[in-house]
Image (cartoon, rainbow over all chains, first blue to last red; front, top):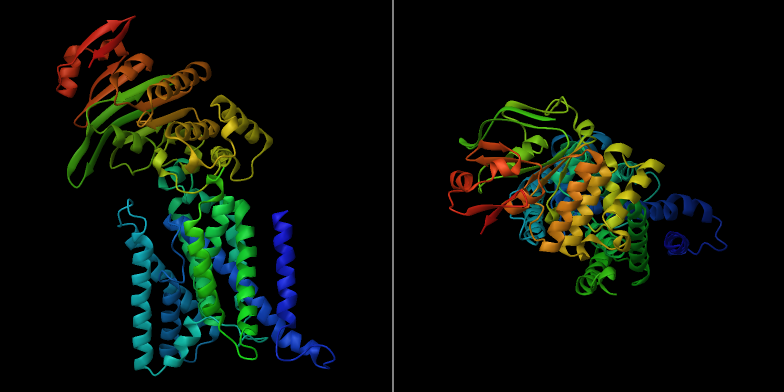
Length: 312
Length: 250
């Protein structure tokens, strides 16, 4: 029921996204090519980025065992930006797939750094984890800015760190489909992520290869983050807000909840993109900014409202 | 049988376990007692492969710990985690279903669902099955976790101080359930207990430890005595016999 409703709302959003823009599709001879070249790629990019980021957030929250972290604010997204910056500086002629690989690898390293720090924090103070993440992400972002400033590449930083879809055209976003594939692959081991979320003792007790699942999860997060940063730019808070809403309403049995997390992530990002397109029409507000405003507001409400199962 | 041979374990050059050798026979409840820092939890964690062995060997039904694949062991040995470990929001039914993971790898067969159903009934969780575990009381949560271990359906069950935070009714209820599992189904239960009276009342065998060594093992009435408590715990509590069971006057 809720899945059907979600799919219905998402379909409506897709239609809205396809008909929103400067050119009116009615009576336009080039309507079909406009759709194929611009509107469909843009809509697809928003859907994939939203779904994949939401799933990456849900996985990271299980691996770190903390609800208040997500890749874009805890160093993974910044690591990806650092990687792509390095790739541009040191391998300027490399094909985009290689640069993407470097970005993903750097994102993986910075995520491992975050995990190593988190494991040394006292478990009695869960709020330290997101704080350390914010500082760590901020430090990495500062390094990225410094290097970019020295290399005269500052204009790129905005492109990577401020997610927006206005530049998405056919032929310029297709790498995002890899992120979609990674998110789908992650779903197949959703049970294992859920078990890791219960801690090491339960994981070992149930015969899970704990380190291997951790490694797989981190790789998935790094690849999704890197692909998003490079193709459309970082969209913060998606990975934080969406999994938390789903968890509050339906719990953490990822096999059941991940599809919903993906649907809602896709819908939320697409909705924010449409809002960004129409609110100052014909100009655009980047989706990252719109999501930042709406996402944080929703999240605050959520924090102060008790979860559904506590009301009775 | 759990066969522990020559196990020594050090943490930063301090010996937690010194050349420990002990056999836990198959079937029945064995209680592990001893003062704080005696190495009881360490021994339990080593048997449950939560920590890597340094020296010595441990075999569970002939399967060597450290060499047998972890998911194979998960079908013959379960350890009950501390209740406070569980962070995710899961319902009681979902949690108990995860106990079947070693058998089903996430794709439960009808036999799995039957076992889950049985565990829910056995531990009286029917009314709680759709409740989130973070809304349960300490005793209810403990019951849900034990039901999960029960659903895992292993011959061996290890429990590390499961009576913490339980009131007397819940503690007695749990010990009786464990006793029934051992007697009616031939399970082997190894349990770390702080309260010697619970050990004396419900265990078939007692293993007493002190400073990383085994001090005594055997049936309760032979291990628990005024003199033994003085040696093991450095305390002069008096032990009386009540209906053939030792009782510590605290």
